[in-house]
Image (cartoon, rainbow, N blue to C red; front, side, top):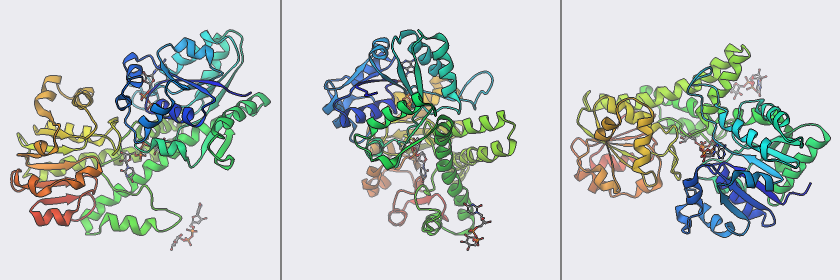
Length: 466
Ligand code: UDX
Ligand code: UDX
Ligand code: ADP
C-alpha cells in the first residue's frame, strides 16, 4: 500500500516534531496533526513560527517550510482519522495516579479513547501506529478495541517507538541510530510494516530500519530507556563515593568510558535524571515484572529510581547542611528549571524536587530559566500538593533576568546545563551576593577553579569540596 495521507493524534513533544520531520522529508505525503487541546493547536498554527508550543532547535524552521504545504495542525480529530490511511497515536501516557498500579503502571485512558475514536470513525482499512511509550502488549489491547467496536474494516497495528531525545529531537529524527517497526508476522502485517518503512525510507537507509514482532518492539523501547537511566544512576551512585574518597567522578567517567565495551556517552553525573520517559518507563517495567511475579527483576530496575531519588534529595540536603544547617528565609537562586538543556520541558525535572525540599526548609527560591515560564514553574510545584498554592507563590520568585535572580542570594544552584550560564559575568554576580557566596553545581557545568579564584565557595557533584 502506498501511503499519501497520514494523521497523528497528539501534538506534543513526540507527535509535533516527528510529524514535522516526516512532512519535510516527504513532500508527497499529507500530514495532519490533531489534538484535543485547542490552544496547543492554535500555537502550532501561530503566524509567528517562533510561537509554536515546543522549543526544539531547528524545529520552527521546519514548521515554517512545511506548514500549509503538506503539514497541517487541527482540532478536527474525526476528519483527520477518516482521511488518513495511516494513523499515529502519540498521546500522553502518564503514570497512573489512582487505583490499581497507582504510581507505577501507565495510564492508558488516553490511548483507549483514541482507539475507540478511530474505531467509530473509520470506514476503510487503516494502519494504526503506536508511537507513545506503552507497556508491552498494549497493541493487543488496541487491536481488541478496534476489532470489537469498529465498522467491520480491517486494522493493522504497528509499534514504532520513538527514540528522539528532547533538545536534539530534529537531529535525532533526521539521522536516527535506528528506526524500529514491530508488526504482525502475517502477510497483512508485513505489508503494513513495509508501508511504514517506505515512509522512513525517504531519508533513512534500509539497514537502519529494524523490523521485529510487536512485543519485541514494545519491550525494546522500555529497555532502551531503562538502560540509559541505569547508566545515569550508576555514575551518580559512584559520585557520592567519589565525594567521600577524593576520587573525581569526571575522571572516573572518562576512564571507564574509554573501554569500548562501556562507551563514553551517558556517563555525566548530575543532580538526577528527569524527563517524561525514564522514570515512567522504568516504573512500567517494574510493574510488568511484578505482574508476572518476577520479584528480583522488578527490584533490580526499581533500584535505578531509588538511586535517582536519593541523588536529588542529597543535593538539597547538602545545600542546607552547607549553609550552616538553615536556609530559612535565605534566597537560593536556581539557574535552570528544565529537565535538561535546550528544551522548555520540565516534566520530572530534578529542579522541582530540589525546590520542594528547600521550600520545606522555608528557603526563598529564585528561579531563572531561559525557556521555562513562571506559570509552568508554579504549576510544577502546585502539582506536588506539598503546600498551598499561596505558599508556593510566597516561597518562589521567577525572574526574567539572571543577574536580578542572583542578586542578594546566599547560594546559587545549577539545575540545568544551559550553555549560556557559562558565559555570565561571574565577578559581577559574586559582588551582588551575600558572603560567603556558594555555588552548588548540579551539572558540573561551570569552571570551578575560576569561580574559586573569584571567591565563590564552589561545589560540584562527585568531587571533593574546593
Ligand atoms: C530519553 C531517551 O534518551 C530517548 O531516546 C527517548 O526517546 C526518550 O527519553 P530525553 O528524556 O528527552 O530522552 O532526554 P535524555 O537526553 O535521555 O536525558 C534524560 C535525563 O537524564 C535528563 O534529565 C538528563 O539531564 C539526564 N542525564 C542524561 C544525565 O544526568 N546524565 C547523562 O549522562 C545523560
Ligand atoms: C573481566 C574484564 O572484562 C576485564 O577487563 C578485567 O580486567 C577482568 O575482568 P574476564 O573476567 O576475563 O575479564 O572476562 P569477561 O569477558 O569480562 O567475562 C566475564 C564474565 O561475564 C564471563 O563469565 C562471561 O561469560 C560473562 N559475560 C560477558 C556475559 O555473560 N555476557 C556478556 O555479554 C559478556
Ligand atoms: P508526549 O511527550 O508523549 O508527546 P505530550 O503531553 O507532550 O506527550 O503530548 C500529548 C498530546 O496528546 C497532548 O497535547 C494531549 O492534548 C493530546 N491528546 C491526548 N489524548 C488525546 C485524544 N484522545 N485526542 C487528541 N489528542 C489527545
